[in-house]
Amino acid sequence: MASWGASASISTFLTLENLAEAHAHHDTTAYETPVLQVLADVRAKGYDAVALPLTTEKWKTRWEEMCLLPAGSDRESEIAAEQKAEVWRSRPGFLKDEVTITRLDEAEGVTVMISDWLELDATDDWVRHDAEIALQQELAYASYLNVQSAIIPAPRNRDHVASYARIVNSCLKNTPYIHLSIRLPIYNPSVLQNTPASPSLLGVEDFAGSSSLSPTQPAPRLVVPGNTSQKLSTAPEGELNATWEMWDLIRSMCDYNTRLTLTLDLAPPLPSTIGVLSKWAAESVRNILLPASTFIANGKGYPVLPKTTQSFIRECMIASASLLTFASWF
Image (cartoon, rainbow, N blue to C red):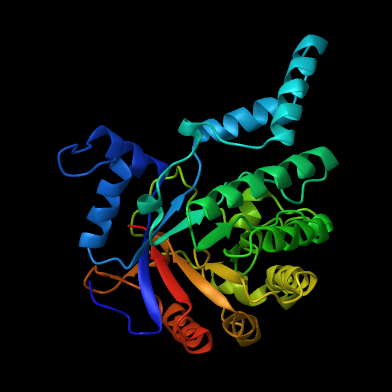
């Protein structure tokens, strides 16, 4: 795989399905662990680094059982769940099958994706409190493994973005050796829909990028995007700038910490509005996510990036020097 030059490196993203497949086809004679095997395969293909989810679905299940009480549950079940939650809150920790990597050599050159289901800006105070504990736990474990960079999920609720920023700032202070990167789309994809999202509350899928990949989603096939340019051109610039305004608030509340950067998700089609793109290109972009849906087919059927995307990436490479990483899913 050809290099993109000194200012950028090319990474790939491994899903939980990729890791499960590696466990099923583990060559015990050549590699000590399935993770080491899949990392070796990825690097043999020419990728400079790897991004993968830090936790498994079992961690999500245990957290929900402790911290989210189902409707209609009896009092005895609520007391039992609360007791488990209090034990966890006093001494947060993982079970072995709740994490994807367990060794220092498995974490070498890896960027971890923090659990995307954590609601750091939830309307419920207790959910937000427990999500913060879970985030601190994940970052502490990543720090133990000597992970250098972690990508955290996007804010969802504009009314509580200040709470999100406070939690991120606390994590920056408590884990001083990890670079945190907030995953954001350039704009809220709901502007492409007929019914716009509420200005105060954005859905999880809308704001995190409904066409983006979660750790358990398969990579989409190569597609030719529909005609979205008209919708983007008629969308008010204020709606297109909503995510940038949230990012601006978060970084200001974090005192412009140099370890806080951006991970831009380019799954939604880029707008043609120069002002919107120039704002993002001037920011401290550390990663650009390029799922397969970002590419279009040229006249010969080969996958290529749209010219607008190519120009935007070049601008980001110039502004971000050597900090930029490209993550691709195919």
